[in-house]
Image (cartoon, rainbow, N blue to C red):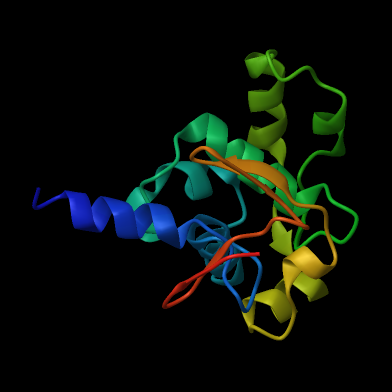
Length: 148
């Protein structure tokens, strides 16, 4: 029971923020990129730097792709060929991740500074637990849970 509260708070923190439209892990990605970490290996495996523990490597890749491959990306440098490589082709996807050199876009810096909301400029379509998050049904979490 002692671990339930922190685990639930970590899970809630992955809901989009009311200020940025991004969850905790996505924001940590932006923070790490702003500090000069430019490769996916650092983002995915430096857990002590990322300080989020909800997602595994496959989910982290999906989150990063959402940040980099949308209409108004916050991350530059992720291989565009990920759009066409089958999701099951983990070897080819991994090779693209390894050779990518990432950085923040100008929009990414604005989101990181809480001046822009990612979800107002990009489609949201992912699952959080058993809830399908979309732009029209975007639960958010800051100090309180906000329903769409």
